Length: 279
Ligand code: SIN
Figure (cartoon, rainbow, N blue to C red):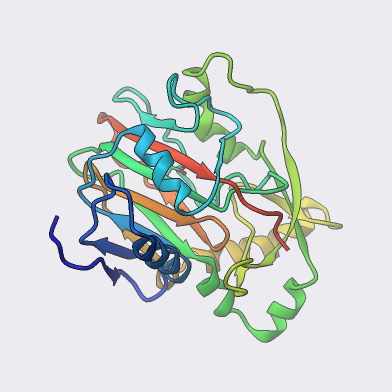
């Protein structure tokens, strides 16, 4: 830490920035909090390195960006109900969030943002990929944008690929609700409520079909969109270190936790921020 002014350095053209010269253990000035919120809206994912944080710090930091919400399938920590542990143990093979998704888009009001803090990362691997859904949307033709503007996607909590990534964490959480299914219809192209920019809002993890069509009929178009969402030019790769904090905007990004560290433990803490109904 230095007394230099806070600095925001972009990581890739599509999204992502690293914030330097900041100590998140301390209360932020009004000016720094505003700078961070502006940077969050512009870069969509912010990374803070070398921050010594406790669960209650994560909740406090989250409140600079919004109000706290809870993840529906995993109970929070005993003394910190707003914080969930995202752990992959040495002997587990499946990781939480190991596929492209935006968080819990099967909720009527999906979360605005999520904070993820690295307590323990493997010696190598366990990176997270992020993709800008602004950039993916903007790369489409005018004709396809026009077609998509009339479509809603049905998002479901039980799509098997995503549901299987929660299994170990639910097992560790006796008392957490396991048998609820959640479903929400959201526009395939949503307008960001703060920036007014348009972003693709469907994902292989949660979007089951296009409203008014069968699953089979929906697949060709949805799979084309998933391919576009994952093109390298819309992405960046976060290499975590212990004590790295990331905050991402779920309204205009997706992420994918890479499961390439079998035999090693990875321990993260997550806080979720409440969002609005997409339009
Ligand atoms: C998540 O999807 O919330 C987890 C992402 C990660 O562990 O990198």
